[in-house]
Image 1 (cartoon, rainbow, N blue to C red):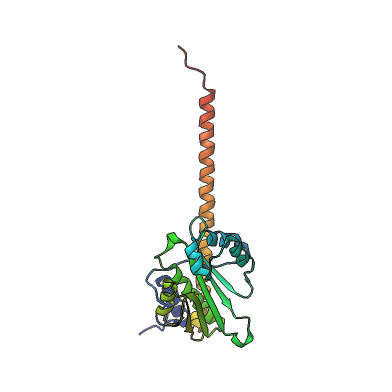
Image 2 (image 1 turned 90 degrees about the vertical axis):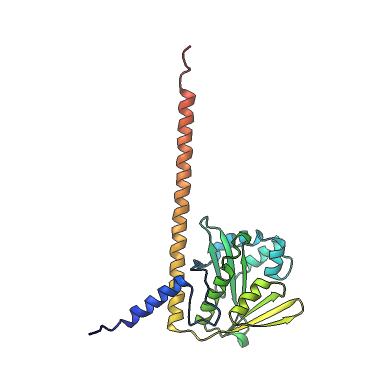
Length: 246
């Protein structure tokens, strides 16, 4: 006699495995990654200072690839000030010091004729390259776009931005080159219950990871303060010790 598996439990089990294995069979071909789970968190207006700090830390060459022009600090400030968190979705990856090491911007079309289209842009800190951060952010943006009813996602990039175009090609996007610029177009499947629940679970797990990092940072700061207090007490005792008798 066999026991039938609970369909909901089976679905949650599959979602959990996919969350940590990085595989989502419902995503377009090429989106499964071998880098493991990355805590990608949706950002809000209160994260603007960290977004700005991440972007201004990029080298001149990386700024050029991200924005398509040699962006100055003033350009970046205007970009950050203009971020629309109600319309668009901005994702980030935090390190243990709560610094943003990668940021993605999924911009939804403001033209009603292209309401089912969205554009993707990403930047990754130099010391985080080669870890699949950009690919993972692209995967997360694709899932969110699908769940919002987007059927076409595109990337406008300089043709020399090999890393970004490679991510798009691996996802199955059609890349069209026009001189120094390229555009990649990726058709997205419709959202499913699987993709909707996967998106919710990833957001929840990223939020838990963020809270753990906050608590760890606070604990490290407390330890540092205690060390300073101990050193201060030790120095005071040494200063107040009576001089040795001859």
